[in-house]
Image 1 (cartoon, one colour):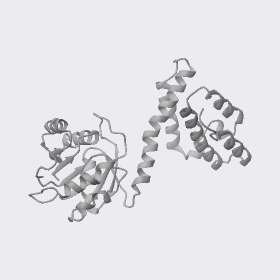
Image 2: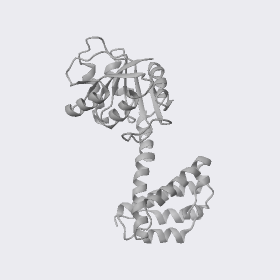
Image 3: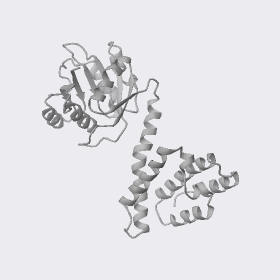
Image 4: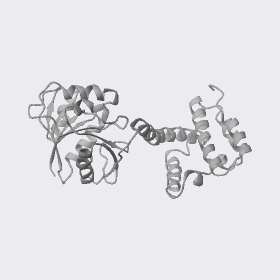
Length: 290
């Protein structure tokens, strides 16, 4: 299988995944062109990957795969414009986008042209220079998209997962909580560790602690592996936590209360007595800005 592709967009997704597929030794995908609003960036990326640099309004060559990797809030407008563009050799055989928050409906203009549609979303944070081995991609869309994308993803050592019925907004919300939320949690926790220890504790210790929690979750359900004062119903320790946060930012206080509030629901599932649950719930309620 040797496929041609066109990439719309020159942001991180276009760069990281464009390079991953272009530089794959198997060479299953070859980019014919890149197109983006930043003309210099488009030229630079195209040059690196041996593709043509096109501008919006240029006639577009036919490709097996048209990949739209633009901002979520611009996706439908860009797709509509591309569907109206000049395709002298015929429209692409498959059109996909990389947004986790949008479904194939965002590409409906191509649906009217009889083109199969799909979504290919990396379920990991994209970083320049990263490897793809073992990474998970979520696929959805028409059967034609699945048939083409699954072997393509496997060709770079990654793992495809096809989901027939996907609620994209809810899926992306969950992914954002797990990825972006973890980053925010890490940053907030590191700041408090550093303040509590006059700088003796910080990033390394935070990573070790978070990794241990993830390892525990690989072995059991959240309500089974949850530990700590909320799980035990330790009112005195939770009260001391809240008191220690009084001199910190309102954001940190709200973060602690929100996280421990959700931990409380897990503790209840794990058998925390109702009386202790109610007492902790009252203690963790947010009463206003600090």
